[in-house]
Image 1 (tube, rainbow, N blue to C red):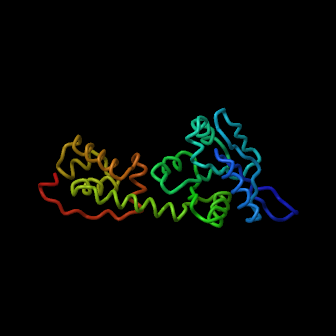
Image 2 (cartoon, rainbow, N blue to C red; image 1 turned 90 degrees about the horizontal axis):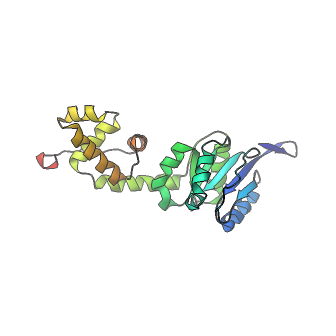
Length: 221
């Protein structure tokens, strides 16, 4: 962080968004915050390879809409290797795609529907080396998963309980007296219904949600 007036630390932010209006709004928010300033912007139609130089940046604030631009793949590859923390800025209905972003390179994510104080707090948090989860987005994800749980069969719930405890497919199959191929099929359906994209998200799900204990009969096999 750079120093101003010999004392106060200013957090230097790079904003990446295809919307000039979003960038203008963020500049206004940060002026009010006092200790955050935009030192670089990548905005407008992102059709060419953007110049993402983060040497003098403390935090990169990424609007997920930028990833849908032609330069999106380039932005994503570049952010895998930058030094400053990346804070993902998104809307609640984009939550199903957030966990892979966080695993790849982000230190946190904040909802575009939250107030300025939440965004400023998120930037301060990740700039200090922390991880940030916007409560609004976390609640949306919990609701999404809860809805998915109601769609699971009793057998799928049983398989989920084993997988969430770290059992391999083979060990789960042995414990339930089923073929490994059957467990793989259940696992695929579980992932689809819960909109999970791999084992890492399954672990996150298991850590944050109570999986009901099923009572099933032969019809659920």
